[in-house]
Amino acid sequence: MTIFIQSLDYNLLDLIVDGPNLPTVTLENGDVVSKPRNLYDDNDRKRVQINAKAKHIIICALNSNDFNRISSCVSTKEMWDRLEVTYEGTNQVKEAKISMLVHEYKMFTMNENEDIKSMFSRFTNIINALQALDKTYSNKDILGSLMTHELSMQKKDDDEEKEEKKKKIVALKSSQIEDSEDDDDDDDEIAFITRKF
View 1: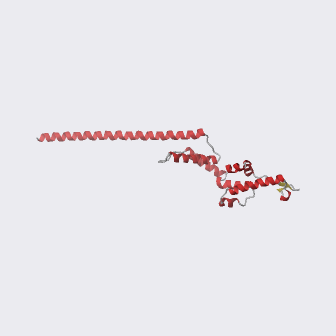
View 2 (view 1 turned 30 degrees about the horizontal axis):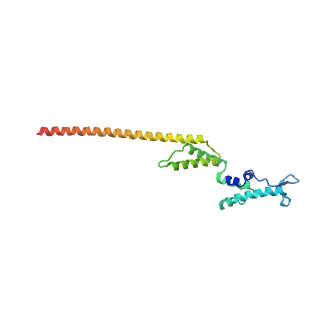
View 3 (view 1 turned 120 degrees about the vertical axis):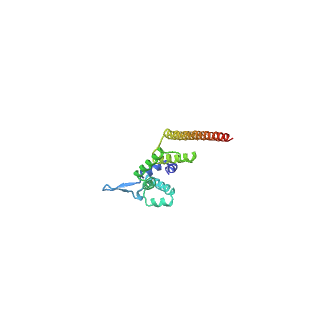
């Protein structure tokens, strides 16, 4: 959503995240209150219009469920904060999500019967989710992780190949022993038959 907002007006995101700068007046007792509309000057109207524009953009980008969540909010900052908590959670929830995703990233392996395209898509989803939570990895780290995974997969394949060769050698030795035993039995039978003649 941030890209959408920035594409329409780059300064709007600052207004949304930092809060609106709505016109205010200070009363005689020192309290600061919203300035009455009838006292607005041109600068005040511009500030109110920018806030209204930001509200409109947020509201138009939401589905009906999200609209119901924020419809009672007065300022764009309040809307943004409520949406942020809804979709990203509180700081504790964010940290838990980051921790879980970092664990998935570090323990990433290719699943059995998974093709490269699916594996890469799964890996990209983890990286994108981490970036959305402001946890980024450099290309060097990502490439290192993939290369480590590739080496471990290659080692696993090599180990399986060696194990398969061992099984074939054992099977060959076993069949040779059985053949030689069969030859001995044949020799005994021939000797027995010749004795009878």
